[in-house]
Amino acid sequence: MASLATTIVPASTRPAVLWMASNPRSSIQRPAPPARAVRSKASPAKRPAGATPRAPSSGDDADACRVRVAVRLRPRNNEDLHFEADCVELQPELRRLKLRKNNWISESYKFDEVFTENASQKRVYQVVAKPVVESVLNGFNGTVMAYGQTGTGKTYTIGRLGKSDQSERGIMVRAMEDILVDTSSAADTVAISYLQIYLESIQDLLAPEKKNIAIVDDPRTGQVFLPGAAVITVRDLDHFQQLLQIGESNRHVANTTMNTESSRSHAILMRSSKGKEECENIARNEVVSGDGLPVIIKSKLLIVDLAGSERIDKSGSEGHMLEEAKFINLSLTSLGKCINALSENSPHIPTRDSKLTRLLHDSFGGSARASLIITIGPSARYYAETASTIMFGQRAMKVVNMVKYKVEFDYESQCRKLQEQVDSLTEESERQQKFRSKEKEQMEEKLKICENSLAELEKNLTLKSEQHQLESFTYQKTLVETAQKYEERIADLTKQLEDMHVRYENSEDHLTCVQKLLRKNEKLIEHYQMEHSTYQKMLVETTQMCEKIIADLSQQLEEMNTSFANPEQPFPFDNGTSVQVIWYSDFHLFWSYVFPVVVEVGSIWIFLPLRLVFG
Ligand SMILES: Nc1ncnc2c1ncn2[C@@H]1O[C@H](COP(=O)(O)OP(=O)(O)OP(=O)(O)O)[C@@H](O)[C@H]1O
Image (cartoon, protein in one colour):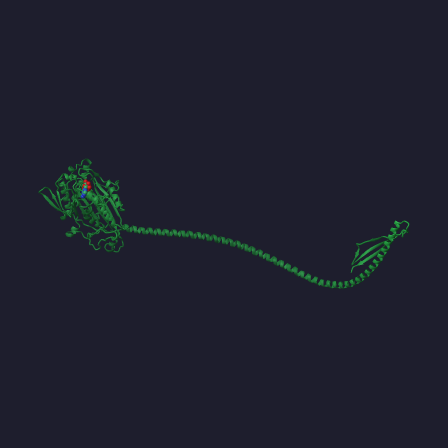
């Protein structure tokens, strides 16, 4: 069994990895789907449903699952210009590389692709990484790894951000670009972890406080996990580039004689994803037989930027850097051993020798589709390092992966779905309960209002009834009283009537009496009239007589006055006789006035009743 340890020249290193998800529980082996374009947002491609699970064994199948290896030549740098001789000659059209040991000895090596120093980043991605990315998007695990001597362009090829110049973008950014284009569904997620293996300790480049992260193997499926690593969901490409930048700033880098920015750790970017539509497809057609459980395919992509191998005597590493270089070379040697074992179909693969090989256990030489790009410099000065790298690539080309299609029942999603249903039902139930209790409260309130109204009505009714009773009583009383009054009145009236009858009868009697009296009075009137006329006659006569007397007397008086005035003339009543008349007017009788007339004649008083009768 050939060992890479013997072929890899101990040197400095700087590895990096991008990791994409896997299914830890159930896996079903399936053949690799034919390579095709990365799915577009508009029409996401489905994995062929009829693929039959089987492990590649030989011939075309074995070749289809073989690790693809491309070699990339770095352009000359200032140091290379000092050495005129190149040790490599590329024949890209033949996919061959000629390695010249000296002017006489040279060897040719065939690779899956040979990139000259003029090869663009885009072309490198399309040839080396894109098929793996497509494979990952179809549900397979995939690994892209860069290996090479320090300063030959691994980080340039893998991790270049290309923010200012998009054409400079490396494999990590371009892979994520394709993944994000494919991950259009809201159900799909893209999450990454970015780690470094530094001094045999796995550290989180996105959460630097996480050091010495443990590797967990699933003995049943052979899957590798890093449960302690931060998993960040990628929002978009800008976000991803920011994450890469953060990771790069946390990566251990040193200035060596061979590279001013030499990575002192292996960087590993892991990307995990899951596709709902594919799961449904598989659930319907292939995997699930009527149990109705959703399945999910998780695929994992690892992009690894290995630390560069370096010869300590050439890199000039000392002290801590020397310590770093030893660890780097140790892990790379361990990787070489594993690749040797894999290339020779050895029953034992010493993956447990280093953190790097443990981490790559299921991704390189495991169940993943893998591509390796080896980077070399042109200078003959580094012939041995270049030769070692080429041999590493040549052995890697013999590694055949057992590409597996990872399917697992999506208990988590099913559980989440059921939980959502339970939550929704609970929410609905609570809502209903709230509604019912609110309704109950409202009903109780209404009932209370009704009861109050009823009580009020009853009260009013009682009051009214009492009032009515009182009124009725009063009315009855009044009625009785009125009846009594009427009865009394009737009695009175009856009595009055009787009285009136009596009086009428009496008045009739009286009338008869009056009539009788009238008749009597008529006679009396007649009598009185007669009497009146008699008296009138008498009055006239008396009056006449009195007037005569008065006249006589007046004459006598006159004569007497004359006598008094003439004393020689004798007074008619010289004998002393005088006459005086006295009148009384207030004396009257029925229908007549009686005037008493007193006449004094001499010493005799004569009383004369004078009666006036009015007819
Ligand atoms: N194809 C290329 N075109 C242009 N420049 C390149 C190319 N490859 C490498 N370089 C340059 O060479 C230098 C070293 O490259 P890089 O750091 O990528 O090497 P490395 O293999 O990652 O080294 P290390 O292992 O020490 O980290 C960088 O300045 C880089 O820009």
